[in-house]
Image (cartoon, rainbow, N blue to C red; front, top):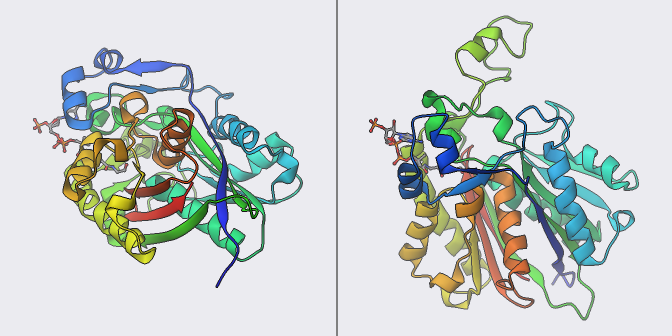
Length: 342
Ligand code: UT7
């Protein structure tokens, strides 16, 4: 039996100051607070102040969340052994954001891995971190989820089905090897994928499959045709989400010998409040067993779970010793869960 336990030693989050309400969006496209609230539960989201702001980048948001997580963990950047950064909106097309954080935090020349699993990116990242801790390879791993969506959405009427949903934000945790007096542990995880649905929620450009000449990553026509923006078959994604969420949740609970009644807190990926409510109802979870904050931040993709986790900790809704279930579903399709004692 593996005696090493991995605990969430610290949590942190950060969002840009600029609040964009549904009312604000209705001034730049044909939409309404009523439509957005009814379909998604979202009332407002954060966008960095200027869409082309070179300061408030994805790694910057991740950095601020990481600094809070380190402080809460009582650790410094020099204590970190590894960085895992989940995002679909990196500062550069390449390299990834992990190396930006390594530099900005002033870490030693530790490894920095980027995970590209969109909405379930943080679940994948945390699962990888857990494996490194459990194998005895590393002691303290920074796991970050961060996104700047506002620079890459179509705010015309054509893009309104997607652009009203997504927001900017970041969350981070420090996953550490537990000492004897610390209780927590990651009890179970699962990760799944179904690549045949890749184009149901995707951004084509810049992608090697979609260039028309053999030279350019990003053709001018891609911009003209709005193919640089995310494209989502909303109904299709919704139907798969409400099936995969419960499957993955029950799989995680079962593999740890736990039941839904044992759960203190379920933190779903904040995709759409209606998805979270559907899943809650289907599984019979009580209101105080579920944490949602999509109303304030929209869907922040890889950031949504660590952002919600960190807020739940700050608000006293996730307490030490609680059994917490994190589950995500999204583009890929990819989905999965992490079940842990906080
Ligand atoms: O995080 C990764 C995973 N993502 C998800 O889980 C998202 C899953 N999908 C969804 O959450 C929902 O499908 C949406 C919220 C995206 C859309 O809701 P929907 O009920 O599926 O709406 P729809 O796309 O079927 O559109 C219904 C109508 C359409 O008009 P017509 O064709 O009925 O005349 C749209 O053009 O609503 C229109 N519409 C809008 N109207 C006002 C689409 N977007 C908007 C908008 N404001 N922002």
